[in-house]
Image (cartoon, rainbow over all chains, first blue to last red; front, side):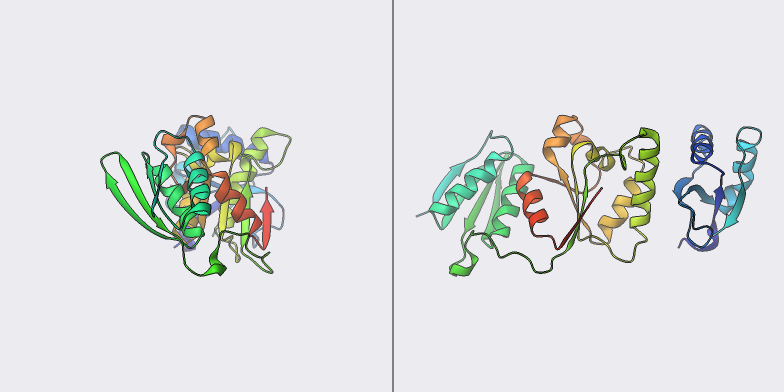
Length: 74
Length: 195
């Protein structure tokens, strides 16, 4: 179910993640804040998960407002 | 001789208290309540005492016919301490940890999401104090809690707390519970995880 249909966006800090969340919420782009999956990083961090097909909406929404580290497919 | 307990108009947990008292004195009782929450609470209490329960609804009222089991072993005395019991998760706040509220809120969302993926699930989740905000409409963790519920995890939400925050009608997952269920579940746990 969860498989490869999602990707996660990683940030350098929790506050960046929260800022990005606020922006996505404001633009009504479906997403979910989740812990960074273990296979991606052993850091105790949070990231934003969204469905792959929303990637082309997520990136422009955040451009120039909040920097992210990378996007990983799940 | 059936004893009758009229618990209409009594606030939680009185109907359960009256039922408990009557069951100590009589083997067969009829309890009348006028709310579904009270009906559910009395029924659950009676079932936990291994009684037989039959419910009849008359208009607003519910009549619960409760019969105590004959065997002495099922008496409402304290059960033996559990050598090993279920895992019970206790959520006493809508935030994880003390300190920064915004961070605590993210951590809680993260925790409840991860719970759904954990290899070991709690048998019961008990939610009280500000934690009850997690179980009402608009909560960011509602989907995750519902998924747990669908997988058979019992979610008990403190009715007193829902009442205190005036969000009782917004409960969206789990069952309204009282201090009796909460206490009994905690004391019957093999392991309590409290966050």
